[in-house]
Image 1 (spheres, rainbow, N blue to C red):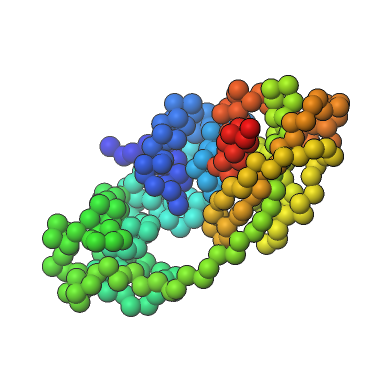
Image 2 (spheres, rainbow, N blue to C red):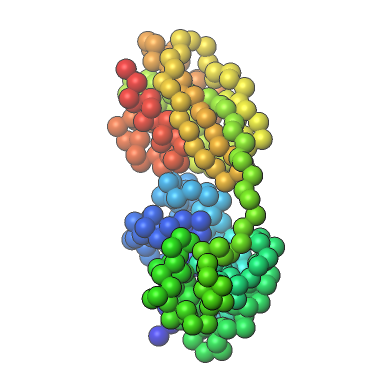
Length: 320
């Protein structure tokens, strides 16, 4: 019996750049709320983005909705790796995983765990990322024609539980006698990686504007960092530039401290500024001018704030 392609696809998308432990509650929530691809396709994108909040890499959530709608329009998931690759957001790994696990196709599935196992098994000296072509070729050479999905899952489990990044458990490994890295004496040296460049540090400000038990939230633009997510107003910081430091409205501001967050390509130091000085004049006009909405503070958990703004909200709430 083949696995449900919807669940395979959803889990694989969630697991990109994210741990199993972090994904489990999100997967359960998504399956409960949207039990099949048709239900997810019919969901408003903002609801999916809010449910995704905290998992990071938010382009995955936008692609999730786009892909669900395309699959629903087609009447179901295509069954070949080549056709799966045509769907929004499905790269080589996800397409191969769905083809192999859900449809029993022979496909070469290479995630970070398989990458590590294969690098050690064949002692590939070329550093990542240049070695990925060779890793894929070696993985192809050992992928069986039958039960490729079971093989892929076994390799992923081997990498996550035994052939771990640090202190691999070689005495427990069923491939130990065939592993060239183990024969060489130090399998933990594989896969070989280039030295990491230090991440640039950007500075910016975010603004907590409070009025009658509500805080002003904005929906971020459809492109760029945290695109399409609800958040606090900010001063235009980006991966390439510091923020302007310009507050969105005049008035007395309090400094609630600094929150730090690390993105893929940069780190951010974000000053949290508070506006609580008396009643704000014409709050509806302010919300309209900032293209925002007043959100009840006691229901802020329902707003689906990404982790960065959740940190800022905690800093603001803890400020006297």
